[in-house]
Length: 248
Image 1 (tube, rainbow, N blue to C red):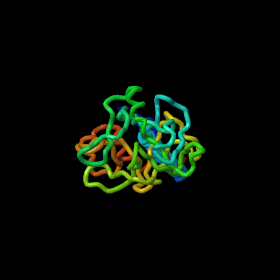
Image 2 (image 1 turned 120 degrees about the horizontal axis):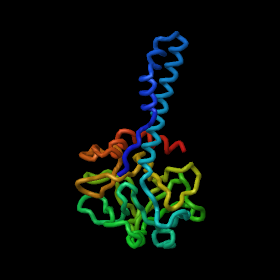
Image 3 (image 1 turned 180 degrees about the vertical axis):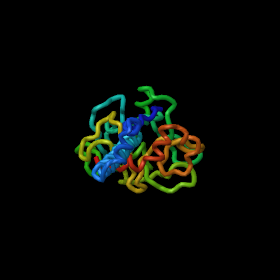
C-alpha cells in the first residue's frame, strides 16, 4: 500500500517557529497579534484542506475496466442487455478484481486470485442500470449496480456478519460514482469512489475475519488494520475526504 504523504503545512509551521517568527508575532502589538492569529487560522485551514484531499485520494480506490482505459460507461436495463456494457471492477489498494464469490457468511462477493487480463475478462459481469441508457454515466448520477444474473443488484442492508450489503432482484438506485466534477463523464480506468446514498458512505477495501473483504468507514471491526498507515488515515479522515468529493 502507498505511504501517506503528510501535508507540508506542518513543516512550514515548524520552520517558522524555529526561526522565531511565531514568538515575535505573539510578543508584537495588537495589530501583529491579529495578523499572527489570522496566519495561524490559515495554517490550520490549509492543513484541514490537505487532509481532506489526501483522504479523498484514498477513497478513490476503484477502477472500472482499467485494462481498457478511457472508454465511456453506459447503463443497461438488466444483465441480459448488451454484453459490451459489462465491466470489471478493480480495487487499487487490493490490486485485484471484485467478483461474485460464495461466502459462508455475508454477501457473496470476494477478490480474484490475480489481476491478469484473462481474469479481468472473466469477471466482467458488473453493470449499471438507470432510466437513461442512451447517454454515458456521469459523476454524480444515481445508478443501480449489478453483477451477473438475478438477483443482480447490490443494496445496503443490515447483516450480522460481513459488510451491510445484500442482493436485490430489482434495481436499487442508491449508488453514485464520485471523483470527478459533477456532470463530467466517467471513463474506464478512472480512479473513483463508489458512494452509497443510503448509508452515506463510500465502499472501501476492508480486511475481515469472515465475509467479503470490503466494508464501510464507520465499521466497528477495524482490528489490526488501523496500524496500516493508509487505513488508519481513512478511519480518521474519511468524512473530510467524502465531503471534499461531494463538493466537486
